[in-house]
Length: 179
Length: 387
Image (cartoon, rainbow over all chains, first blue to last red; front, side, top):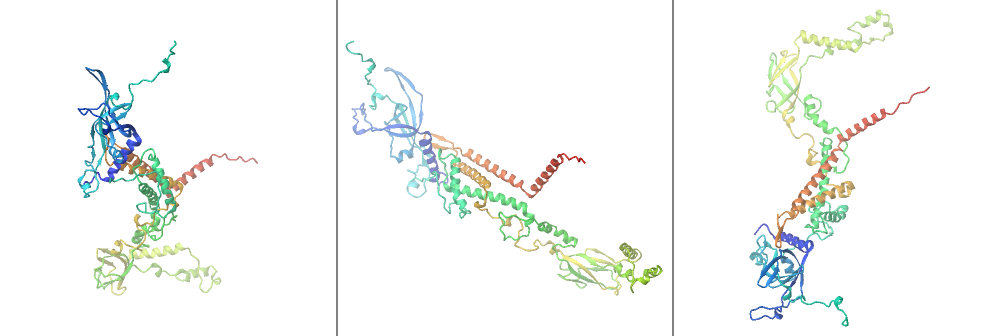
C-alpha cells in the first residue's frame, strides 16, 4: 500500500482546490449543453439549428489565449483558444459532464469544446478507477484533480443562443412621415 | 466514497478528552478559554477569509502545549534558582507556585565532605580502633588483625584511613602546679610578706594573668619536645612507627580514629527519597486558572505560534498542490518559519524576564537602587545653621 497520497491527504488537496476555485478565484462560465434530441442534423451529421439546455454556471480556472486573425478566401476572421480547468469534484458532486461540442460562455465569447481531459491524477491514482480501492482491498489513495477542457471561440450567429442580427427601433431617428 | 476530513468550521465546543494529554480538562478556566483561544488563533491565521486546514482538536493541542510550556519554563527557572535550597528536601511536597524559603541546607551538605576530612562534622562516621603494642617493638602492621582491633570492620579486610592517633605526651597542665591552691609559686609567702596574709581565707590565692599560665604550659611542652624523646609516630602505607619505643609498661595500647574508605566513597548518604536533582524536584504543571493575565497572554501568543507551525507543516507536506491546469505552492514554509521564529522569540522573552527576577538579579537591582538613591540624597543641599 502506498505510504503517501492517502485519502486524508487527498482531502487536504480537495479542500484547497475547492477553496481556490470556488472561494478565492471564483471565475465563472456558463455551460450550454446540446439537446441532441431536438437538434436536427443534415446528411453529414451537421446542424445549423442546434438547441441547448439552459446554461449552468460553473467556477473554473481559465487560460485565455491571444486572439488570432485568420485571413482566407472568405475574408478576415478572428478566433481564440482557451483552456478551462474545472474541479472534477465540483462537477462530480453536481453530476455535470462536459462533452465535445458543448458551449462555454466566458467574457462575452462563446467557446466550443474541442477536447476534454481528465487524466491529471495526484499521486498517480484515480480513486474511482484504482483497482485496490474499488475492490475494497486498500484504502483510498490519490485524487483525480481536474476536468480540463480545450475550446475555441466560435461564431455566435450559428449558435442560436443570442440574437445577433436584429436591430431595435431607434426612436431618435424615427422622423414624422409628414416631414 | 471519498474521504472528506472536516476542517475548522469557524467555531468549536470544547469537551473533556479533546486534548492529547488531558492535563487541564478539569480546569474550568482552561476549558472555558479553549474555544476562545482556538477562535483567536484561527482568525489570526486568516479565517474566515481563508480556510484553515486545522481542526479544533489541533488548536486545543496547541493551547495545551502552550500552557505546559509556560509551566515548564517557569518551573525550570524556579528549580534552577532554588536548587541549592531544595537539595535533600522531601519530594512529597508540591512546590508549584509556592514560595521557597532560602536556607543553608544545600550549601552545608555540599560542604560536608570537607567537614569529614577536617574532622568537624561531615557525613562519614569516625570509628575508634586500637593497636596493641609490645615491648621494644617500634614498627607495627596496621593490617594485622591480631594486633589491631576495629570498632567496625576488620583490619586487613576493610580499607580504612586513620584520621587521628592518640599517642601524645601527658598534657602539660597535668604537670603544672595550680597557682590557686597557693603552693608551688610561693605566692602565699609573698602575700604574708606584704602583710596581707591575715586577710586571706585558709586557702589563699593571688589573681594572676592567664598568659602567665599559657607561657608556663608552653615552657613545659617545649622542654618535652626539645630535651626529651617526644611522643610521636609516622605512618607510611600500612606501617606505623612509634616514638618512643614502647617499653611494655607505660602504655600497651595506642588508640586511634579511622574511617572506612568505602563509607567515604559511598554515593548514597543520608535519607533516600529526597530531592537529588532536577528530575525529582516536585514542580507540577500549573493550573491555567492560577496563571495571571500576563502569563495567559504569553500562552495565547505561544498557542498561535504553535498553530502557525502546525499549519505550516500541513501545507508544506507536499511541495506542490495540483489544481486544474496548473500547480500551486502553498505558504507552508512561510508559516513554518514564522511560527518557529515566534516561538523562539517568546521563549527568549520569557527566559529573559525570569532571569531578571532571580535572587541574584534582585539583589543586584536593590543594590543599584540603593546606590542611585544615595547619590540622589547627596545632591540635596545641606541646611546652613543660622544661630
